[in-house]
Image (cartoon, rainbow, N blue to C red; front, side, top):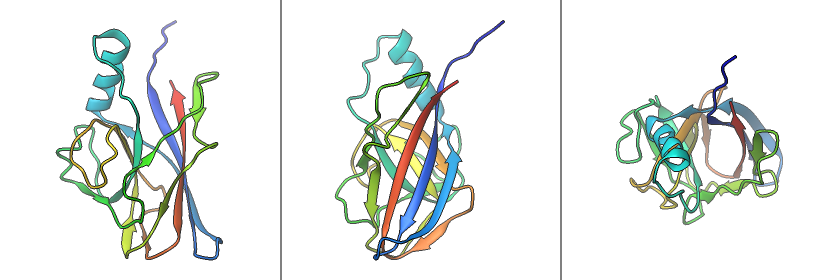
Length: 162
């Protein structure tokens, strides 16, 4: 019997209006980029140091591809119409039974502009709108993009080994 191992994410994203009412919820899995796979392998079995921290960002409309990198993702752009000055930190609990999550510290984005959000991405650089760092994964909402002008988006991330 053969086993395989890797790490992917399942995201649960919610939007609440200014009164705190839930307006929509979506759940989806991500695409792990080639750069993300290479980093994971090199940290585990090569001579690469692990990234100090990981950050969640909001993805605009367009198609993600396995070859995407922060410096080059021509199919989509980052959504930056939120109040926070940086991408939001991913704080995962310790892994147990092959999974971990950030439910104790979900990422929250306060929308402050008219935006269309289509998904979420994970990168090891906090610079809002920046083009550096390793893009580990990116995924689109299962229900399609959402146009917003206010409220909050909360992202719960579930790391799943396979």
